[in-house]
Amino acid sequence: MPSTRTAALAAVLSSAASVVAAFTSPAVTSSATSKKSTTSIYSTVDPSVVTKKEYQDICGVDFDDRALTDRLKKTAYLYPKHVEVIEDFEPMVNEMVDNILLETGEKAWQPQDYLPDLAADDWLQQTKDLREAAEGIPDEVFVVLVGDMVTEEALPTYQTLLNTFEGCDDPIGTTDSAWARWSRGWTSEENRHGDLLNKYLYLSGKTDMRAIEVTIQHLITTGFNPGARKDPYRGFLYTSFQERATKVSHGNVGKVAKEYG
Image 1 (cartoon, one colour):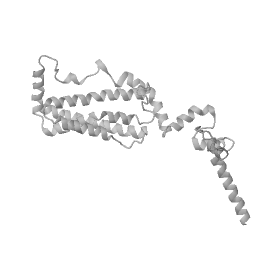
Image 2 (tube, rainbow, N blue to C red):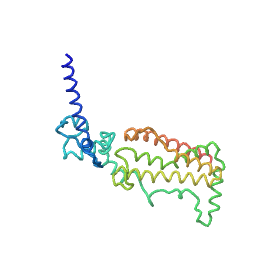
Image 3 (cartoon, one colour):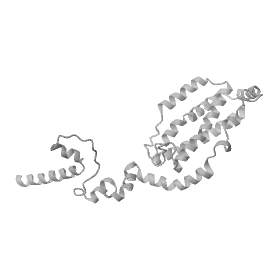
Image 4 (cartoon, rainbow, N blue to C red):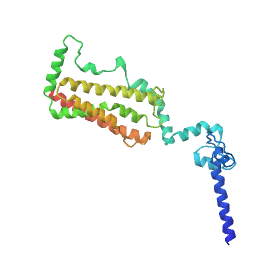
């Protein structure tokens, strides 16, 4: 019996060694017989030791040069199936970015459209009119306006978050994919909200702007993690609720502010 157990153990060890060897760099296996150092890095697997089926089970693709593109797609993402769905949406996103969602430049409203023109001859009167209108707005409403503005001014954090969503990122900053163009367009649109609120609060003279600016800097420096973990599904689930909640909140604050000023 001991000889039988010994033979079985030897067979198991031999099999394990073969599998390990299949995933070991040739530079490592040759080091036992050669003292020469090498910087070559190998990532291939010996198909004579690991079958195609075994390799496919491990990596999700065939051990075949023709499957290289598919292999890179499957191994480049933590959520390849989610990325496939995101890519399927791209034609629709592309059309909406071009024709429906975002207008920029001269076609879009800008913060200055709603603020005193300090380059105009009557700039002082315009500023006085804004301050008089703001004077009747309760401090409680201004507290909410400050919170809304600080949230909007943290925009760099939100764009950073969007660029972590697999399949929706903008890896070079000017990527021409539909999702990357949407991300930049959305950011440029959102940037106006913070600019308008910031300038309004400053011109109203009713807030401590330096304290607000300190808060904004701390917020951006600290960063923000909603727990999306690079998953576009988790990311857009969060943003769908968050964006809707922000729209409702800002709309309600605007209605209340309008009642007083």
